[in-house]
Image: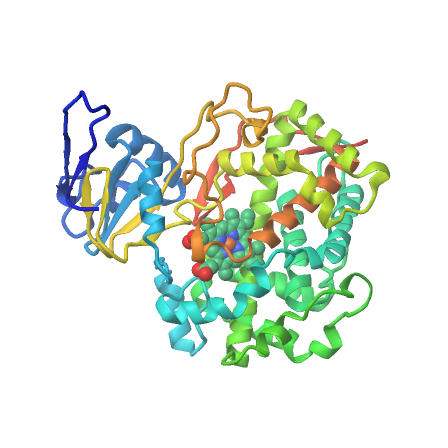
Length: 473
Ligand code: HEM
């Protein structure tokens, strides 16, 4: 699109020509910018906001500056916050073959220092493309996650047994988020290592304890310990013959390392790096946060359903209809559970899982809301909806959304978009669906505390422990 745009007149009789003049980026509104530090002072103790409550800053800035605004994050980075679905579409459609996302500098430095190949989340350009190509089919083809259903079914059964045994007389499970973390780890571990790690056992084996410890260390002290994790993963790979389970629930599961290693040009170092990245991303994306990504998302779904008993009943009815007599869940059953999927989506909408997850560095100049945004600028997408504060899964169903507008395209992208979309999406969703189905087959859940807030550390976590009461059905 050029720097000015002529819109066609609406009817031949109305000879009106609209001319929308574009303005340079410097005219775009945004928070005050101080020399050298840009707007970052706003997120310091001197400012109004903090980096772990980015959503608060965005909401207020949206009200202040409108559907597009810029922030200078230090001397070199200009961030454009994009709220308009048409602008979002323009940014994402301009992506090309190798969409660029900013990497986390500390990850890049530490990987280079230790000579460990960078993972998908940190690479850009053709380097990213080559790695993504090697693994894309393995994880994104239809049915890629479904082959793991039998084993992940068993993992979800173990979660329910654990809740049953840990539940106190008052119905609360101590350290619930910790338990969900172990569930996420066990579930993605089955995929990455083709073996059961034993995280959900009352006394986890030594190796599982080491993995739990290493990932915890990684969350809290990344620079120093990030590489303990690949070392432990390497041990799993080295002992693959011993660890691997090929019968029972694992009968039809492909071998992750093996399949990757067969890809031309993929080295052992790359496989170790990638598998570690996926395992870590499976419990937490992009290595900074203190809590697992999928586990946080699952906790928020449970929280929202516990606060909305009427929606919980509708979901339970769907589960009983699709799985009469607690039939074991199969791929076709999941496809039928539209309300389950709507509940998960609605929870993602209310507690958006990654602030700025779908950030793009523009590969070329773009016109957004009448401003010329130069290449290499960073753009973030945002969202807005009817009755935004309410948990209404029905809005995601073709029938049943009542008077609510259908959610517009391009404003709700929890897993990102296009060639750079989350590669673990199918696995994350399957893991969450399974846990929700099993929990609501066995329990009624309640949450009677204060509203839980969100804290952002790249992804969104509850800001206080969620105390959910489980009542056996
Ligand atoms: C609720 C769970 C999850 C959410 C909401 C989520 C969300 C996202 C988002 C928004 C992106 C950026 C996409 C873009 O730029 O367009 C991403 C990237 C990524 N995710 Fe996830 N993710 C989740 C779970 C997982 C899991 C389970 C895995 C691994 C098994 C995973 C692996 C990755 C990787 C490797 C990338 C980088 C992909 C690339 O740059 O090519 N994620 N995720």
